[in-house]
Structures are given as structure tokens and as C-alpha cells.
Image (cartoon, rainbow, N blue to C red; front, side, top):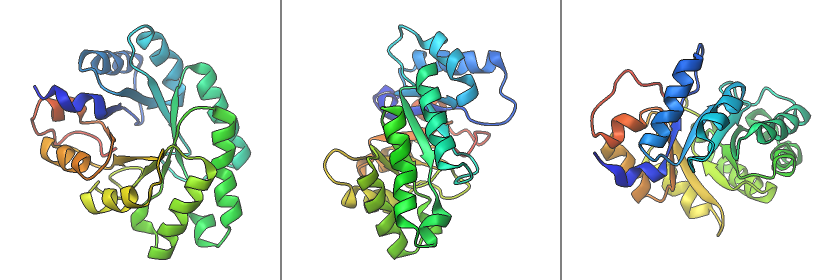
Length: 224
């Protein structure tokens, strides 16, 4: 067992068809392995908060995801406030990549800032780096920081990018004091997890947390 990584792992279960029993088991795993948080869909936040009450393991959730950038800004802010009311203490959000590419920088920034204001909890922005040009990457980081994001993420899932050292270093080098980096996307091995943390990530979002801390391959794991 490799328990030193557990405090950096956000134990993730976000997919179609999750049952109540599976969600309970997921939260119980987060406690058993002392993971950083249980990352769950918004619809399961109340149950997760109930199961994890008194354990010291936070409930995290995500919105405007897995299809990123489809919600209205007002809807996103309202949903963030509701998730916090239900028990989430941190939220990962999709950002408006299309707005960024259209030069709508004020709207891109305000979309994030609205969630920050409405939620009052740490917000992690999924920047989808592989979809951006170099200039767009720089703008995305700068605007996200200006909006009050607490964490920068390389991508939303392995469907966009397998988390890698280059992307994490890119964000770490540009993140100002007080803004941290979370790695996400097909993190499935102990070696990969250690490399990402060594590159400067402080959190790892993965559905393979149990396999990673047990140092065993798990090819059936989802790509988040």
C-alpha cells in the first residue's frame, strides 16, 4: 500500500448510471484510503455529504461537465451555490473555451468569477490545454486567475488529455502565489501520479485512486 499519495488524490466517480450503493461504496473508499476528497456528480452531493459527515473527507463536485462550456453563466453560478448548500466544499468547473477562442475575454472571465462569487468555495477551472493555441493558453491562465480561481487544471478528462508533466509544469510556472494546480486525465499508475506531483501538481483527479495507492494497474478505470 502506498498511502503517502492518498492525501493528494481526489477520488472521482462521475459517469452515467451510478447507483446509490455504488456511490456509498465510493465514499466509503475515500474514507478507508484517506483520500483528499470524494469527487461526485451534483445529483449525488447530498448522499455523499451524509455518508462523509464527521469523517473529515470533503465532498467535491463538478459542473458544466463532462460536456464543457454548455451552461449559461447565470445557471452555472446558481448551480454552484446549490451544490454548496447541499454539502460540496469545492467545485471543478468547465470554462467557455468557445468564448475564449472568439476573443470574448470579459465574458470568459466573468463566467468564472460568477461561480467564485456565488459559491464561496475553492473553484478549480478545467482549461482544456490541448484545445488551445499558445496565446489562448496564456489568456486562459491570466483570465482564470483574475476571476479568482483557486486551482488551474490541465484538462477535464482523459478524453481531452492524458495528464502529463509538460502541461502541469506549464501551469505551475504561470500560477501566482495562492493559486495551485490540479492534474486530471487518465491518471492510472503510481509512476504517473508521482511524476505529476513532482512537477508541481498538488491534487490529482482520478477514478483509479485505489489502484494507484495499491500500486496495481487498472485498465477498466474511467478516464477522469
